[in-house]
Each structure stands twice: as structure tokens, then as C-alpha cells.
Amino acid sequence: SMCQLILLLLLISTVLSQDSSIYDHHERRLALQIELIGIHSSFSEHKGDSNAEGLQFVFQIPTHSATSKFSGVLLLAHGCQHSATDWWPKSSTCPDCIGLPVERAIVLEALKRNFLPIALSSVNRNHKCWTNKDIPHATRLISHIYTKFLSSDFSIPLYLLGASSGGSFVGILAQAKVTKPKVSAICVQIMSLMNYSSLPPSIFLLMTRDTSTLRTVEKYASHLKEHSILKVDEKPITSTFFFQHSETLSLQDSEAVHKA
Image (cartoon, rainbow, N blue to C red):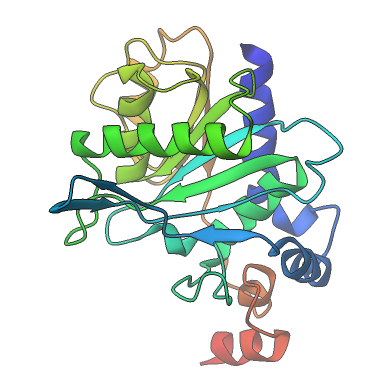
């Protein structure tokens, strides 16, 4: 529904406007340290004795979920040459995590709004892009999360967000209509789709200067009932840029990098 699209839009737009957020950089860092209790990684599921098939994923339960119903489950799909470990910082529960700044910001915004974020690594660990082979893996992971942690409450909506190759994949997964529950809305970042039919409410987050992708999406998404196209302009690199957009660099480090 349009309400679901607006909810996802609110999540994404807040991340894009971090400089005007209701909480400052230090509060974001503190919130991350508090919220990191309860990260799980690398759930493996085996088929038979000789063909073990593992799924690498990271997820986090919102700390206030015990007192209120989840806003939804948010599946996060990385771009090529990336992994599920991009979305959370390194910790004792996720030693392989690297915590890229934008990815971490998205996770934090999701947690604040009582979403349960889960990030899955693509099957191909060479180029690490997504293909149709990832559909059963994603479907099985979603089923596992709902069954084990949400008491099979399939009334909790499922949202998908992906960047680049991951953006293409969330469109494919939504169109496949194999997940339970069905996908309520998707966010496709910096990518157009091969097929625009049978999509749920959709947000396309595109760079203004990527005119080719922008024209393609504007042309083919125009027939969708519920969709929104967000255009992101380039941002100037100031002396405070890396401090404002990173949980690890200090203001002094940011100024030094900018000066260099």
C-alpha cells in the first residue's frame, strides 16, 4: 500500500539527510554501541551429508521490540564485490564485519524505527553479484527469520532494499512472489531493472548525474501505480565530511584527510 511505501521512504530519506538529523554524530555512535547487543552471523543450513550449503548473513533484533510489534523485516542486498558484513561494524559477535558508513546508517535508522534488518551475502563469492540462484537462499533465510524470531507472524511486513546489483536482485525477488510473506515494498538504489511488471510499491534512489539510469527508470517505472523516484545530488567534500558520514573517523582525522 501507499502507507508502506511512505514508511520505507521515511527510512531512506532520513539516511540521506544525516546532516539535519534529529540526533548528532556522537548520539549515533552511542546508539550503535547500545544496539549492537544481539547480532547474529553465519547461519548454516545443511542439505544431505556431502553437499553442505551455507548462508552468510547478519541480522539484529531491535532492542525495543519486546514492548511493541515490529514495523517490518528489512532485507538488505549489497552491491557487487560486497558482502552482508558491510552493514555492521566489527564486533565479538561478527568479527568479519567491516561496517561501511552508509550501510551502518541505514541499519541504525531501521533499528530506531523497530525494523528487523537482515543482510544476506550473494551465493557467488568471486564477483559477489546477485543472480537468480540467490532467490531460494533469500527465501529460505526470510522463512528462517520469521519462524525462529517472529513466531511465524507473517502479518509483519517484508521490505527489500538493494544497491546496484542488489537493487536489481530485490526487484527480481519481489517479482518472483515466492517469499512468505509477500514483499510489501522495495527500494532500488543506483540501478534500473530488466522488468518493471508485477512490482510492489517501489522507491528508486538514483544519482542525478547518472542520466542514463535516470532516463530508463523514469521511462519504464511511469506505469507503476505506487512508486517514487528520489534523485540524489553530489555532495561537496568539506573538512567535516568524513566525520559526519562515518562512525569511525574523528573530526581531526576528517580534516587531515580533506587537507591531504
